[in-house]
Image 1: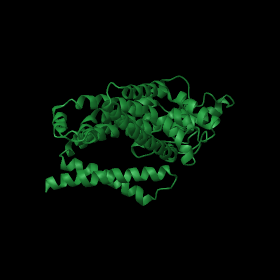
Image 2: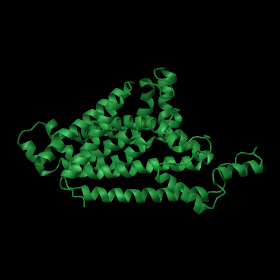
Image 3: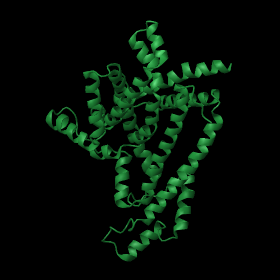
Length: 363
């Protein structure tokens, strides 16, 4: 029964979750609104896969321990961010030159900025524990949780598109380069990868805008209003991760391809494509998965520079403005979202290690 549950999880639930996820990504990129029921099904399949896999592989204690560590890590990050914001000279209303001193004092009293730091910290931590991140100083009357809930889906959508693109480009490019090792095809692929890693996002964005928007007039310059608006931001955001994935995949494939079991597969007369994509690739993905954790967190939380350049209404816009305006609650709120994504992404990566390499044991 236990073996059946393992096989069902790996061969049925896992592939179904991946297929449903990819279909939703394609439908969303095409500009269609995904019904809530479909989102719930996708989320259920993904959560169900990890839950079943955790149970069948005996990883329950490990996951619970990591979740407990996650709470502690997020608390430390929230505390450090709170302290650093208060240490930096100046306050959120110091730039309001037109405010009379008594008005400024009244505003600071309204937001509790005149309270002792210990009391301010207690109010914030106790509120964050119940989901209340406070009110923004610059978006008067709006809760930080409301601002995040409105902007995060856009950043999440952008990040998902870029992440899928980076894997679709990076893994095949890495396998292609490794399969043509020490040829001009390998060299050309790696030159492209190194160039993509070296060039900063703002420079790539400027070049692409100049060519495809002003030169050829094929794509719109900014905003996030449909498929044609998605292309440039997604490409700019996904290009660098794709290049890193290509280099990691190439190096890992070149290492695995020298293994004894690959020589045995070739001796049996298996086709080179089957050897590469069925036997070599799965055993080469550990370095890629390691990189995928922090990469996914960064992309899903919104690449701030890319969102700012293309005027995308995601979290990046609010984060930049909140730092400039010293909007303490909004800065901490966005930071906590990023930290939470990063911690959970790393947990998922650790679980996937055992999926792709059963020799790895988590304890």
